[in-house]
Length: 403
Image (cartoon, rainbow, N blue to C red; front, top):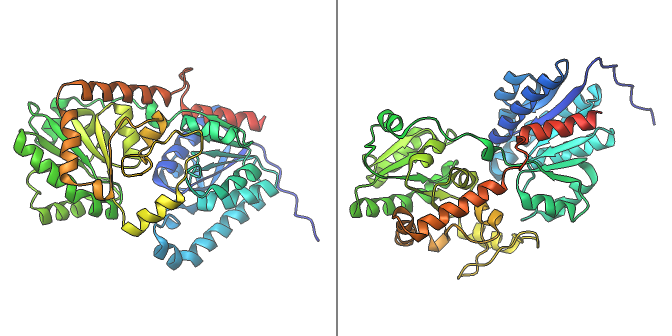
């Protein structure tokens, strides 16, 4: 069998990066910017979006060309996705980077890690996929292909190390963000709100299907609370959903005039009295900001039944069942190791239950004070005591493996 050709000699380090989703792409851009300060002559290439390209990535494949959602979309785009994947593999073999940084996006990145491992290229994986909850069979891929697993939740380090993986908790990027600078009065003026009133924030999700399933009960609960007291209701709209889509949905409920659409979720939660948040990254944002909230979520009955059968947490994650036998799903509760935030899932996610869970958090009293204190503990657990940022810790690891 003929041997592979020798790679061209490099005058400066080359880093291969791969990030296919919005949050990972944002982290990738920060990593590139920091590494270019540390090693001015280095070059970066791989898979990423426009933000990574602006930071200095030579894009072999564009993230927007491969980040499709849903089974039908994946099947329909499979030939194109596979062709783009082969382009990435060809670039790796031709250029032989000194190191690779893979960010989340497991369906592509675990396969790239196999190629990189065979070529003897160190692989740093940042932001672990949630294989500790399901798809546990992928653990062997981490054990076989990943040089360092850099995780953003404390329990993930314990999980991986107990299974022979060299893992390090580097802190959560959201925990190091400063609080929004805009004052309550400035925010009110921007969106035509009354700063003298209390505000409730609704976060139904970052995908249109999530909004479709979660928003109706949220709107009903908000209407009931507005009848009890003169609250104003904010609805931050994710860029992946779109203002017009949400405005049309609110018109169907007759609520378009009673809810104010905004484009900054962090500022909305910072200034709101309390929030209703669909399970996902927004629950971590709410915890870091310290905004009391209730977690909700609804999927199809079949999906929920399958999830209940497939999701199993390891011993590193205390996960007490609720009164109807559901495991916790909110990341803030998994981090805390106990239920500090109410979760209303599936049939328990009703406007009546939502009002009952949210009302104590809107009023001054023990429930509100206790949750604020417990959210502060969660935020503290997501930060490193040394004060180093997660991005800097990732870059420290990259530099150490570069030698």
